[in-house]
Length: 116
Length: 111
Image 1 (cartoon, rainbow over the protein chains, first blue to last red):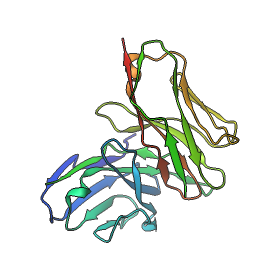
Image 2 (spheres, rainbow over the protein chains, first blue to last red; image 1 turned 90 degrees about the vertical axis):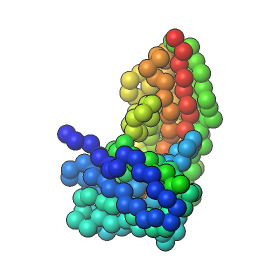
Image 3 (spheres, one colour; image 1 turned 60 degrees about the vertical axis):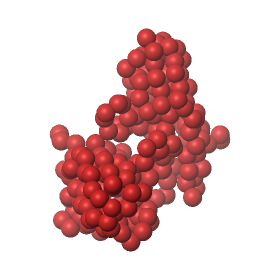
């Protein structure tokens, strides 16, 4: 079946602008995660959704970052007033949750965000 | 909090050499442990996993054993191929559901 998809694959924006990054999880996966990967580093957790609600947003770096998942499927990560330090690859992952334990997370190809 | 410490790279090996990439972790409770791989130009893929102590995960000739006594999950392969060239990430899923990753190890295998 189809994997996790993310759009756009690349986004170039200017400092101060607003951007939206989209994630389509694997069908039926109730858990959805956003991570950020800077060059030469491992992914860092941003936010986790279980269904429509944000179960854990402790990784969001500041209030310029916000994410939604209104129907429990597609999610959008929103970044206001972008800064050059926001430049990174933003990864989305989804998983099943079975018996209260999270199953393997499957990752999308990522969106490379460049803030000029 | 949870953390993963991974062997620094880059690592360069000749084809058919033995590979070890060290990974140790800090976590409360009993985390699940993972190795993910990122091939050039591709997304993160799960390579193998282990969910409890003494479990061995294996895939594509790679193996890793969950060692609770040493809090380690070292990745090994007996004979690497050029196609194994990639970045390898060790990760854990602890009491929180998100993954905590190491910084990654770049592996280059020369023919």
